[in-house]
Every structure is written in C-alpha cells, then in structure tokens.
Length: 95
Image (cartoon, rainbow, N blue to C red; front, top):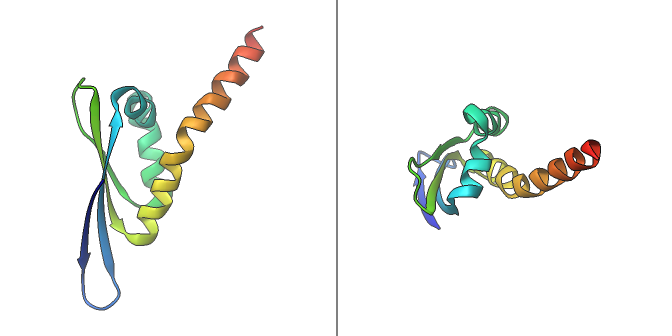
C-alpha cells in the first residue's frame, strides 16, 4: 500500500492511498460504466481512480481528507461481500 500524507495548515490533512487489486476485483469495484466507483465517490467525497489496462493487477488510488478516505476504504472493503450476496440473491430468484 502506498501512503502519502500532506498537511495543509493546521489540522487539515489530505491523504493519498494506493491499493493493488486483482483486475477482476477492480473491475467489479468499478461496475458497469463506472457507476459503482462514481457512487462511492459521491457518497464518500474521496477522489477514487482505478488504473487502466487488462493487466493482472490494477492500482486504486484514493485521495482526500482523512474522513473521506476512511469512508471510501470501508466501502471498497464491503464491495466483495455485496457482490456475493447479490449473486446469491439473483441465483435463488432464477431457480
């Protein structure tokens, strides 16, 4: 994990955190037409960037004030569980 801390006058701290994820998980995080990552940005306030490419690993960069970073990070960590629950619900509905 890459971590950069920038202190801007007093207690206003801006963080930049880089995460390395497998391409498949990063794609799931992004969602169709980047809707999931846009929603995370809107709800957390953090700037979220996912690197381009079809390589095995993708870099996810989170930047912003500490509270927005922590909110976005929690949302990212919850995403795989949401995907599993969604797929289980869809497969149960189909059968």
